[in-house]
Length: 251
Image (cartoon, helix red, strand yellow):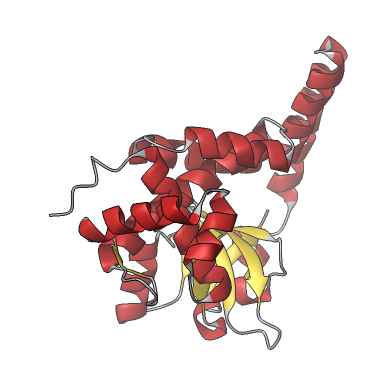
């Protein structure tokens, strides 16, 4: 069994960098890692040897650097922790993206999975709750600039009442559901129904693609296939046909 507990924050940074470079360039060189982490080539070589010894990657001088299955699994979890923290800082705390990215780098190591999942759910809650949503987040931004004001709170209460009343009189939920494949880049939706069956339905469940979860479209290939999405902090690639089996309500 791989000893993940002994992995230092520095080695996690190397693993994260290697994973990200592979996603961008499909291949990794010592030079790429050194530039990404702003360290010397000698430091990179030492880290690669340590990670290879612990079975997180395959490495030999002048050969292609690849992640093992265990290394890729851990790297994805590290990337997820980073993305979840950054999302929280940007979307909830209104921190500038660059500062949020730097803070996430410092705090991402050692956060237990259950707390990461709790943060994901909190972000979703803030974005979809009638008492929250973008108005709440924008209200917090105003509070940072000028402080809380009672009249603004009263305006929010009236807005919530209007929203709930409007929702009661609107068309039913089913009429508002559309396939995920119809969303544009940057759109978010609440998964309402999964129309897939058999192995595809099982795969969706394993990936966290389940009713009640928020899903965001990050990229769409020029020809419309595949579609890259983010769910529960994970980045996934779906074929357009697969995405059409997921019905969402746009947020």
